[in-house]
Image (cartoon, rainbow, N blue to C red; front, side, top):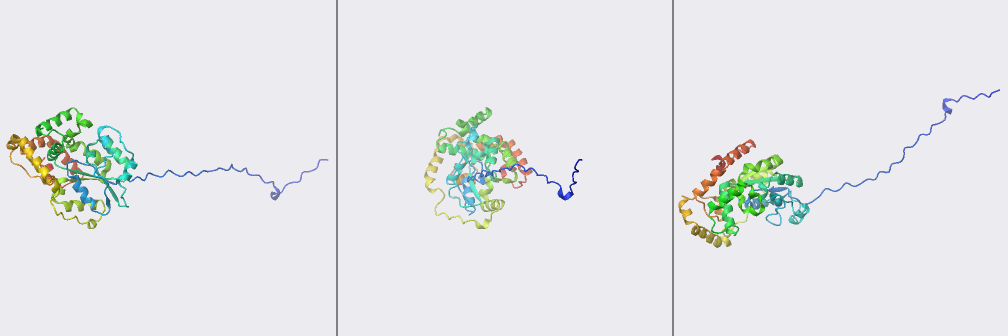
Length: 330
């Protein structure tokens, strides 16, 4: 006789042992800290020979603007010649060692302006919070200032006529050789074709880029500086008053500059006589630059006329309605 198997009630059913998932050991890795280098948050990227030091000084009077330890850092300047930057980004730490939490760290490197798209892209990638100021000046007058400054510093022969300098600039530009570092003293003419260089800055930085004109700063410095401070979301009323000069600016250099002016007149007497009446330029007067003759000025202005017309169209398209005379006359 076969024994019957008792039925199991629902309560007596055997429990299934659930298999435990293998224990996972999760190792929490700390994310790499983002670099905290004191890179600039405000850059005056151009142009040279447009009295950038004056604008730098004016902005530096605000307590929320920290100036570097040297006048020009030029960290990205090698890119201007197709070379690699020589210093790492942390090199900025020593230039802004005095930074004490100010909102802006200001770098003034005017030669960045014509450095090309690669330089602009590298600047933008290295400084994600950057705002850019682009200081433009009448390119014809700026070229004359550049020439006289290079002669005074011994970078060009003292006896070189201005027309010869312009011819040399044009020849190097035609062959693309003025972009070589060895020809950098003849590059100012090419950098004055602002329409070739400005679009890269405006398209890359958008509303974080601002165009300023040297002529406007010279004519109405308070208006221009306060307007810039509002754009930077800073209170203009916090500006530290400018010190009252007891002596004329650069009084110690006046004798050497006067001697330079005299030398220019002696070296180019025919040019001075044939140039026609002189026009005063506020920036050159402040810098002690000899006045330029109309013939030389008109020749170079003709070279820039088409570029200036295109520049005026571009600026108006970006909302700039107050333009200097050299753009209105283009």
